[in-house]
Length: 507
Image (tube, rainbow, N blue to C red; front, side):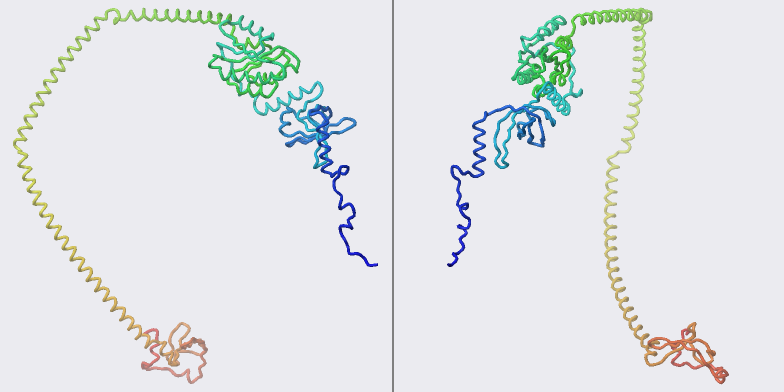
């Protein structure tokens, strides 16, 4: 029996041909079914209480909620996490609000959290501390940003609820202290879900229309209550509106022991609504007392000043000038008349002197006859101009002659230099033809002593003397060796000139 050829489709078996059916699902289909079932069957929003575990919150939040029997994975996107208002610690018990869904890529069923609140009595306290830490870093509590209160405000905006007891305390206190200060009551919700938004909007509106309404300061207040009742004044939007307000704000929220975020951000914090009104509204009784005191001081000062001036006037009345003023006028008039006479006399004398001097100058001018002098000077100037032209022409001719002689001299010098150059070259050639190098080149040589003295005869050397012989291509040294006959020979007659005399350096 022969073996059939290999078939990969048959080798794979039935599994290669398996397709999704109603009772057989792919992983993607199964996870999608789980996701749709969870989202359709479970409520759209659920609240889960548990302890926080493994929190990671660089951007999005990933953590787990657990109790003693189970663990639930949770995720909060950054857009939702920034609204929580606090960051829980490991083990904190919280209430997470969101919806359950399945994440197919990781096969994880998790709670998508859109809201997170602490559980227990310290939940709001934690949120309050987190808000304070954040605003403190932004500088909302810095004293440098606090604005001073007006000394005498004409109108104050009171932001509170019309039905609250705080408003009656403020009105009663302001009316008792100073009726000249008017109050603008701005009815605002101070408790509930929309209270924070309405408080912030009211602060911005009053600040924007302060000039139109004549508002000098703002008082934000309400009566006491629980932490939950006062929480509207701890919201971030209220803190932002208070910090950005250009008018000074006094905040008095709750009782003296209560502290809210708006009180920390405001320019001045008051323990009670009554104290807030006392800080803003001046006391008319004290103002009257101050006015009476200032009036008394002013009266005393004016009286003392009048008395001083009266005494000074009495002293001045003792001077002669004030006793008989006409006497000083008469003396002054006499002085003026005397000065007038002296001045008239001086002017007449000066005029006469100037007239005499003018006549003398006129006579001298007539004798000099300037028109004749001017004519002579003009003729003399013309003669000098002609002479100057002639001299300049002669100088120019001399300059031209000088240039001509200069060119001739340059040609002569160049010609003589050329002649001397040619003659020098000729003499150099003649000197080279009779020079010692030419003689040495024909095979001759000459010998000298160590000090360069030319040796002409055997009598010029002695035995064992060091001598130097020079040829055309170099020198060599020798030691003289003389026999007894040679030592006895002495030259007594002068030596006739020879060819070697050319090498004599002393000639």
